[in-house]
Length: 510
Image 1 (cartoon, one colour):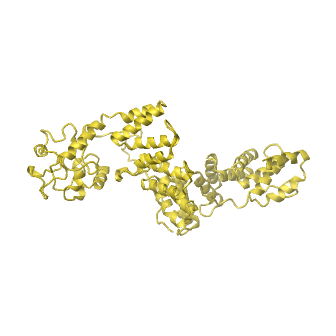
Image 2: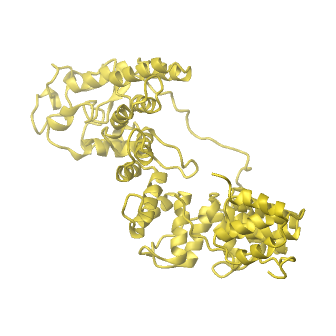
């Protein structure tokens, strides 16, 4: 789905046919970062100075407790919000493996029984380097508090030895497990039955989301097995329905906007299944739900798609006002297509947005900086027409050309017109005809008219009355009113053979 909100140039190119004798205010603006000038004593720009010590390689035997893999940590003792798995995820997203940063004040920061703190899977109950080692070496299942006291509510630590044993055992197995690596190796070798079996074993053994994702995709594509959409959905939902926390949210990168993590990939695959109707009827409402799930996972292209679904009513409900928050969310995150949509909304208003052309131009300029073709055309158009941005034909040419090279049909027609008139560039009829041709082949009605007129007049190349007539008729069918009279005038000049060839193009046999 693409937006068609373009502000075309006022009027299309009017060529005289020689033969016929005439013819809701968001209150936010994209931010720009200004790099301060370097000080006089700054090192040369090519010099890189690094301070500090080299980070040591990670210890694969190091693991930790959390409430996901050790339920008694969360349910067998009094609740401590610092130990909640969501809070721990949040803290670790800032501080990584710094144990001291993950604990509540006035606690033993080195206590490996606390969620978030690390210990070795080879010595889960402590070693001589830990002051509290003796306190943790107790019977499985017992909760141990300060001084070795058992399960006293105001003294008990949140996790017990059985929790640590489970976490240590799982980490020990995981760092030796090669099933997922072998599965991908078999897949790369195109041994799909073996790969499917290994992905299944990997998920069953370790619960890897990537194994379930691959199994779902292989069932969907019929790789190593008969295509089975129901099985594909089953395995994809193993990924999307798994427990979700802050660390699972995709950190969207505007410079790599289509990157997906495992959960996003699964949700987007499910959305496409219901959009296309693979293995069953199309289900727009289900598709919308899965695009919204991918939005929850942090994937801005899905956020933008939800906005389009509401704007154009794909799933039944057509509401620009409901689309706006999704466009806004993705635009603020730096997703260029949403920046373009927000810019267009500010230019004209609507959907609860108060028109603010200056702010709209700023959003469009930001989207253009990211190479968005429609935004490049829109900025070129504003420089071309003047008003919101000052008239500047040379800047208009720059933006038109960038958009045209990306295949934007309106920009191709616009730059063709500038080459025809010589405005902002030197007049070049051959170049104008080339750009009109490229745009016309993409269905641009104005370009069809312009190309037809140039062919009929022999401008920028050889004269061809038959093809000129064809393009004028196609322009007429595209809604260009003046193309009808021009085509009618040119039709009287065609030979019977030219007319037959034109009809063969315009009215091909069934």
